[in-house]
Amino acid sequence: MAIIIKSDREIALMRQAGRIVALTLEALTRAIRPGITTAELDVIAEREIRSRKGIPSFKGYRGFPASICVSVNDEVVHGIPGSRVLKEGDIVSLDVGAIFEGFQGDAALTVPVGKVSPKARALLEATDGALNAGIAAARPKARLGDVSAAIQQYVESRGFSVVREYVGHGIGREMHEEPQVPNFGEPGRGPLLRKGMTLALEPMVNVGDWRTRINRNQWTVHTLDGSLSAHFEHTIAIAEGKAEILTKP
Ligand code: MG
Image (tube, rainbow, N blue to C red; front, top):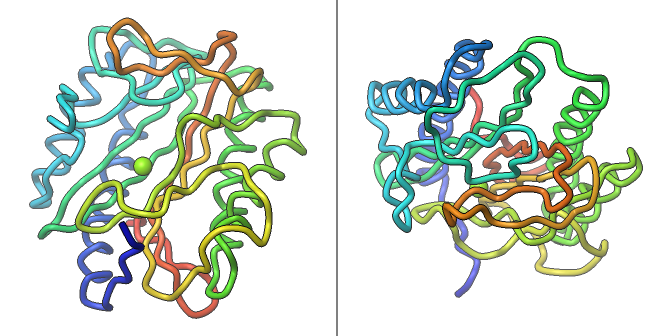
């Protein structure tokens, strides 16, 4: 499978899908407080997406039972919303995907519930910063490895580790297109970036060891050592100069 270059018209539709995702993440961030369940967040997200004529892309994807992924504390990604009640000090990763007129948007962020530990706060800042470092490196004529290396270097210089088993991806009509976008790698390696490529960059960062395990529910990914994990993601389009973030309000 090859990397699909998008036209300006296709990117305009992805911008609309991305806006739905971003507005949904804003609504979820406003709703997060001690006492809310992760299932209630899922209800809010589905309502937000559908009210803007979007389709929640995760729902039913390989049998996933909800509209969003909600991953708490040592959960890395793919957490299933349910009866879990959020409490002060938790960190909550929210991953949202929406389809608008056949095109996908995909973004995530990790939100503190009330006051969190200094370590948790540093983890969130490092993961968000790593995403921004990756976006800054994603320019025409750079190579994909430059993006991966920028993310890895940002994370590891702050004493945290990047998850290896799950990676970012090309995105467009499909949620997962070529290329895979690892959060670790060598500068100067991999495909050349070109205007019109659309990518989901998504560092997943652990306080401790980078290794993970899958829960008995076959979906939720946990850190192997039980340490905290954070996840930030944007869908971007490679453009002349700086990449455009498509998942913004
Ligand atoms: Mg993604």
